[in-house]
Image 1 (cartoon, rainbow, N blue to C red):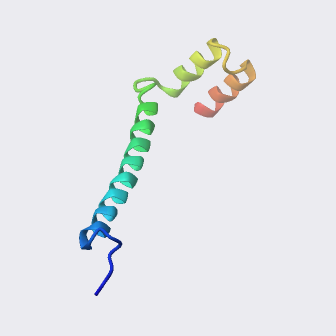
Image 2: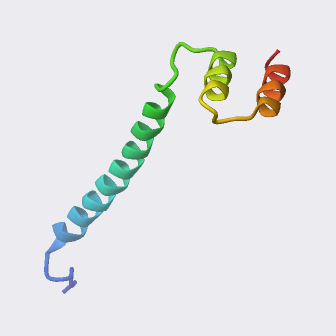
Length: 72
């Protein structure tokens, strides 16, 4: 007689379903988080974003000038 850990034959199958669903949920949450980060600046071109970052003091003039050269 085979022993299936006290849960019967379907115990192992239900654990497989549980762990598969948990792993899928983790990947789904990561994907949703990445998509929401991309929605922060949906219609802005990179130079506009650089200008905003410079205006808010997030980057220095030297960094802004380098970004302008890199983006053109």
